[in-house]
Length: 66
Image 1 (cartoon, rainbow, N blue to C red):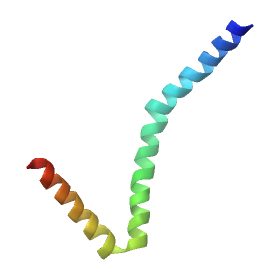
Image 2: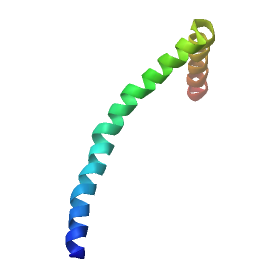
Image 3: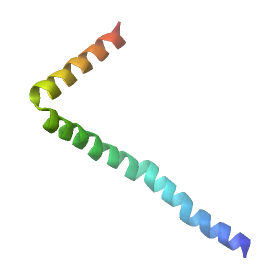
């Protein structure tokens, strides 16, 4: 009985982990990251949000290239 429970547990657990890791995880990143940035820019506005974000991205890229 214990081996049957363990087998059923693996049959349910392993596909769930694979589904989350390879399908749901990247999908959530693709949806939530841009949505969070858009919400942040809506709250902060153009000047305080977009221009500061653009400046920080360029500064980071400049530091990595140096």
